[in-house]
Length: 139
Image (cartoon, rainbow, N blue to C red; front, side, top):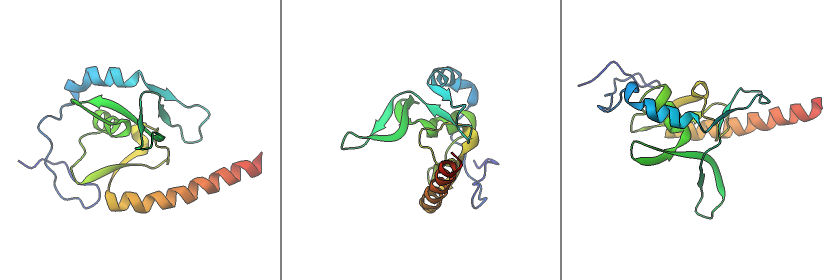
């Protein structure tokens, strides 16, 4: 059965996963919120993840948080989207418009295609570097 849930990119109807029900996530939401820190010094009002961090294959920190949700370990920003916004369709991913991998603020997360996410990544890097340069010039 197709619900009124639509893809934000192409507006095609998407099926809502059967398990998605915000009320059943209440315990997960409380557990999740224990690891969120509001960064008051941040220009973007980010809510940063302070729980477990995902590691790259070489053991270095990837910058993404991780959280066990629905029986599997997932990236914390993906869990935040599911807890506060809704389900993530299978062919979509979550983008941080603020450019901070540790940010779990639902207002900073947007659902996009993988291709769009890759295109935005290079634009964000350029924008963040410009902002850092401006901040250095002001100080």
